[in-house]
Amino acid sequence: MNIFTIGQLAKECGIRTDTIRYYEQLDIIRPEDRSNAGYRLYGTESIRTIKFIRRAKDLGFTLAEIKVLLNLKASQTATCRDMLERTEAKIAEAKENMRHLDHMHDALEKLSEACPGGDMPLSECPILDHLYPET
Image (cartoon, rainbow, N blue to C red; front, side):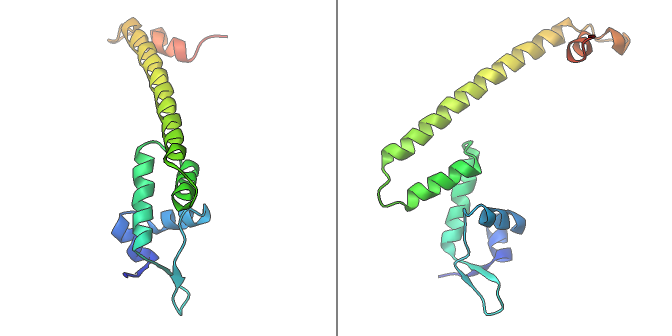
């Protein structure tokens, strides 16, 4: 088994050591041992866990949600249904985010179309009027 210090683990995973320390604070990752000098030591499972975290973050899972997923993975009683439920909740969240982004896009398009551009004074800009209305 390969043993890594926190610096070696960070380099191997392409992240910063303070990120690993933060994951430790959240109890998402733990050192597997300590050296005689007290340095944290990690094994290949820590690399797999960090890769899991990165992939889950790429799919939109928060660190709190990732902690739950890792607990499911470690559970002797968790089922595929448990994982599917969390995945479906993330899909619903992504759909809601897409609706919000579509609304934001449409509003920005309308503001953009209303703006004459050019050399008009900024005080005449309808975009600015929308963002900073008179009371």
